Image (cartoon, rainbow, N blue to C red):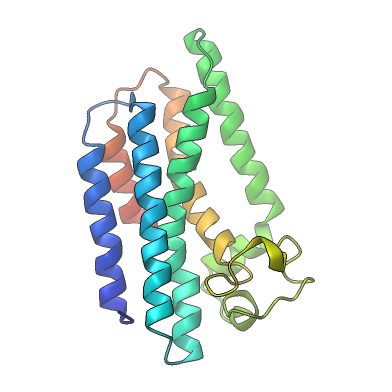
Length: 204
């Protein structure tokens, strides 16, 4: 597998399975179900790594495209559901107002992350390409461009300088929409599965 269509089908299959798992009508997704989705996405990411190892990229452009767009789609979903799991695990058992404040605080954290990574957000969202060979090619670590990435905390065969940050952008886009809904409607009247499918359609 190394074509755009095959990768997109891989991601569509991931979403199909997720839709089946969270096909419910409210926000009360059981923690064990969220954890099950996280485990599924971890396995999917491992499967994607195996594909890359068994089917080397035919060009530098293919490598850049994969780490700029394909891997972040899968990793972004994993980061999203991992954060959903962590936030729900730590949600206070208090009044509606206290729960609402809890979600507002989580939304503020997303804003802080956005502001501290504004340059890369603008680069990625504008579809700029002039730094792609530094950001999205394996083995090119420039600590001035990638100060938060260190060689020993990642898989050098399946990681680049900023593919994780690209995935975080996609995850945060989803989380921002969800947090805005939750802080305004913490009792939950909109299905999580429906919101997720709409978000994926707009961010993917």
